[in-house]
Length: 163
Ligand code: PNS
Image (cartoon, rainbow, N blue to C red; front, side):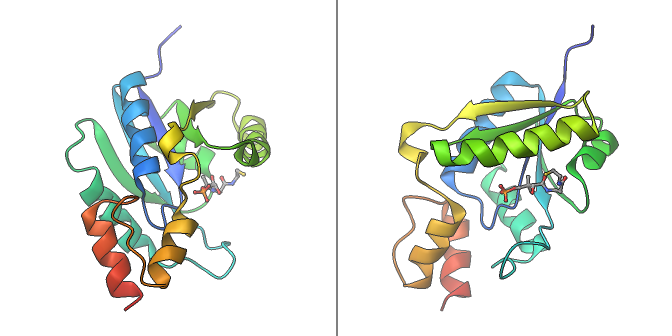
C-alpha cells in the first residue's frame, strides 16, 4: 500500500485568512506536498469579492514562506482536479459544529465520485474557531481593522477593495 504524498487544501479563499493558513501549515506537517486549490466558485451567492486570479495571488503571497506548498486555481469538480494533480487526499479545517454537516455532505459526495480520494479534517485552533472570510469581508467593508485576522497583503487588498 502506498502512502499519500500529495494533499489538496481546497476552498474559495475569498480572501485567505490566518485560519486557512493554519490549516495549510498543519496539513503540510502531515503530507510532504500540499496544493492549495482555489475554486472558481461561480455558484457562490452574490459572487466573490475577489476574482479568481486575485484570490490565487493573495494566497501565493500569504504562503510564500512555506516550502512544499503550492497554490493553484481550479474550475469544475474537486475530484477531477485531484486526479489531474495526482493528489490522494483533501484536507479541510473544521471550526464549530456548524461546519460539520456541510463538510460531511461534501466528503460524502466526493467519496461517491472517487472513493480513492481521502477526506481529512483538521480541528481548527481555538483562536480561529469563529474566523471566516465572510466575517473578515464584513469588518473590512465597514472600515474595521482586520490585521488580527489576515496577513498584511490581504488587509491591504481589502482596504483597496472597500475604499
Ligand atoms: O471555502 P469553501 O467555500 O468552503 O470551499 C468549498 C469548495 C470549493 C471546497 C467546494 O465547493 C468544492 O469542492 N467545489 C468544487 C465543486 C465540487 O467538486 N463539488 C462537489 C463536491 S460537493
